Amino acid sequence: MSETVPPQESQGGEPAGQPVGHSGARVDIEERPARSAGAAAAALVLLLALGLLGGSIPLFVAAEGGSAALGVLGVVAILVGVLALTALSIVSPGQTMVVQLFGRYLGTIRRTGLVLTVPLTTRKKVSVRVRNFETNELKVNEADGNPINIAAIVVWQVADTAKATFAVEDYADFVRVQSESALRHVAMSHPYDHADDGEQSLRGATDLVSGEIAAEVAARVVIAGIEVIEARISNLAYAPEIAQAMLQRQQAGAIIAARERIVEGAVSMVEDALSRLERDDVVVLDDERRAAMVSNLLVVLCGEGRATPVVNTGSLYA
Image (cartoon, rainbow, N blue to C red):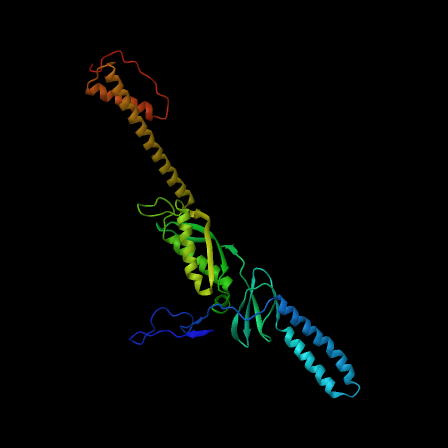
């Protein structure tokens, strides 16, 4: 049954909580099965209706001979046949039928094929097939304040046909708008890259961010009886006005990381070389000669150009 839920008031007389809609009220309704019969009963009613409509013809012919009662009987047969036809419907796989009688919600038919329901009802088909769409490419400032372009693909389907029909004006448009709102909110909560400890970046934790998007979209569209199956980021990039600067930043970070690896490996090689020279008694080095050798080895190992050896025929202390 469709009910209008009034807003609750606090002790001070002000509405408590967040009002929904213009008057602070919303339609509270849930799906329930409508009274219906399967194909066998529907086929019998169809045959009966066709028989009544076909049988009314000879009654009208006989009524022309002067029998008014037969004419009245023919009219009754036509009305009953038409009334029986209004109770028949066809439901395709992946479709449901929301049934109303003079504005009152009777229920939803989910069985497929030829079905029999209450006569004189209005019926609206609601698809429960899985749907997907891609949001518009949104320009958002991420957690560090950098503008980015982001879009997502949302996969959803109708779970409650009554809420989808009566709780919102257009559930498909409702899902689209709320999905973009949720995507914008999640994108603003994470940095694009280079996340601090305890943070997750949009580029580095795509699965986690996609899960957050799906959860937030699901929370926003549950009022319309919609179930979100999954959400995935389809496009993620810096905005064009800062893309070049961010590329230089990423290149600088990559160079620094490479240099750190080179220095780490060079220091390890120098330590190994000095330890082997001392262990095998190849040469005895004091602190000053050791420092000179370490400096030369680091220059050779860390330098980008080819090393040019210099033969020193003199003394280090000369």
